[in-house]
Length: 253
Ligand SMILES: Nc1ncnc2c1ncn2[C@@H]1O[C@H](COP(=O)(O)OP(=O)(O)O)[C@@H](O)[C@H]1O
Ligand SMILES: [Mg+2]
Image (tube, protein in one colour):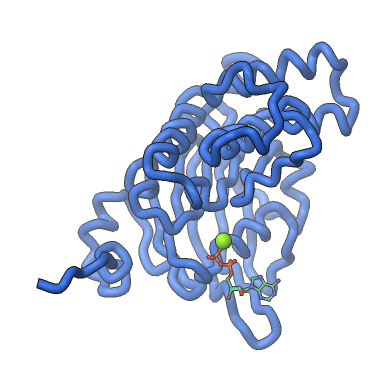
């Protein structure tokens, strides 16, 4: 599908029900439930080690659950099924760009490796996706020449090459200075507004979460302890949530 119809219907509905995962004795996901509507930005916020990356790995088929279900548009997916039935992409925390390739080659890698398009078409698509994230004229550079914020945006451009219906972001602002973090957050919002892609973001960055989320959830030790609109989360009386939201440096008086 192309054109306007695809744009309007692009984003899928994602639902996770009762997802459980242990590594040996360590129960990392203890029954995760949440749903993300088509075209929504849903942020799962929580501290390091709370199970955010493990959750995303289940969605892209890198881990198989011990229990629970992942549904797309109401249909239960087998592990790894999603990637073949739906167009989805993940922006990894590290960015995972190859320094042996140019920025443009990184962005077009999926298309060139799978011989999906001619070289001319790939060049055109790559230029378009880089422009989509506000980066022009960097296609011939090496990733190692770019700032951290630019690398993240290149990683997003690379994810866009598959015209995703679902895009997963793992800590998109980690290791970024505050201004670059704001630019990356704005990119995530602009992409959703332009393409109606469904976005799932996991992050420990409170500013990012409250800045971009349509709805959000808080994960703590493998459980979702609250979910709702950002305003509802802010007002939550749950001590765990308030502790996470208010954690800050205290100066001696
Ligand atoms: N493959 C694995 N084997 C064993 N333990 C793992 C594995 N992957 C993650 N874990 C553990 O699961 C917990 C959650 O990890 P993770 O999802 O990476 O946290 P985060 O919320 O920081 O992304 C951590 O305690 C981590 O050590
Ligand atoms: Mg992580």
